Amino acid sequence: MQKEKKKIMLTGDRPTGRLHIGHYVGSLRQRLEIQESGEYDKVFVMLADAQALTDNAENPEKVKESVLQVAIDYLSVGIDPKKTHILIQSEIPQLHELTVYYMNLVTVSRAQRNPTVKAELKMRGFGGDSVPVGFLAYPISQASDITAFKATIVPVGEDQEPMLEQCREIVRKFNSVYGEVLVEPEIYLPPNTACQRLPGTDGQAKMSKSLGNMIYLSDPEEELRKKVMSMFTDPGHLRIEDPGKIEGNTVFTYLDAFVKEDSFEKHLPEYKNLDELKAHYRRGGLGDVKVKKFLFAVLNEFLAPIREKRAYYEKNIEEVIEALEEGTAEARRVAAQTLADVKRAMQINYFEAWNEEYGRSFE
Ligand code: TRP
Image (cartoon, rainbow, N blue to C red; front, side, top):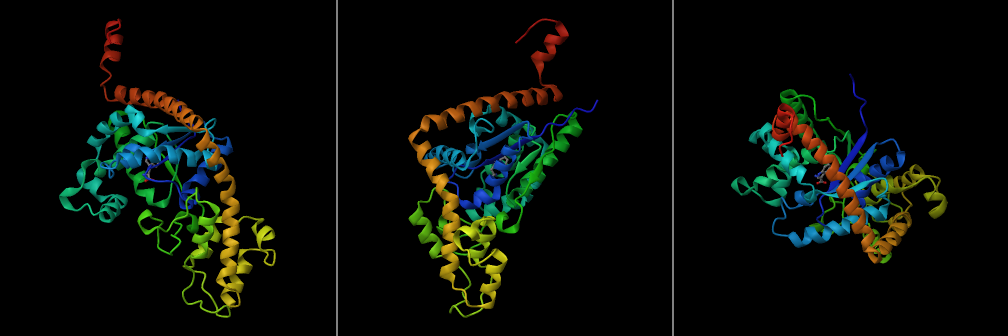
């Protein structure tokens, strides 16, 4: 008998600071789309605090504060706790139990081969023997995050592709050894390259706290203006008359990610669309300041309602905590069900099995 496959979304973020507009185009926007589509049986978003601790073991304060800040970011962009369960990873013990069993299905060399882990190790300066075991194992723990909810779709940025690949391998291995219990998830990537990796305001490939090159969802208007007006463009575009480059020009990359159908009509009616604006910039005769002012208007229009909601939740923090409480309780219920299935398949459901065998209830 073929069971009807449910549609379940799960994704998450490491709470190590407030979310920025790269998170929005890279993943939040896709989550909102799924949440609003009404096509999913369940939608989960996880504050992956345990994962954040794999390389912040000595920074518990930062993780603790970020959990609430990121939760406020979620609610402010429109994640609706009536439709999406927001959960705290460390509050779901079943996830950690699953991880222990999955660790037996992954070799050390496979763990070391994960390209995202490799890149992160380099970035964080963990070399050779100084790598925390937990850090190397975090993709395995992430496989627990995903499979505990039997997620079918995981909206994340392309840097998470290796995590999904490793998760699918664990699912296949588990199912082939113990029987069909786990579900293979699919990745759901952002629609275009501008959204897949939004560069920093300085033109660096990635937004990062240490470079101070990000625009936060919570940035006030003046902060946003300052950041946009000092953004990296085309260093060869010195005079207005000069022809300018679009490729690698951060202002245009952001426009690619954020311009909406009515943006030109509202903020720059001399142009019909982004193609016209780009063509003029390429020809020469269009100054950076004008394009930056337009980008500021577009981003400010996007951020204004988010700021307003943030101000509301900052005043009504109990509502945020209640959303986390309810989301986490539901997540625990679902994860407990999966863990029970897993233990049954692995034949370590002792008391359940003995109860059946002897017809009485041992606990
Ligand atoms: N690794 C993800 C990140 O760094 C966060 C994360 C943790 C996650 N658990 C997850 C993402 C489960 C998707 C599914 O952003």
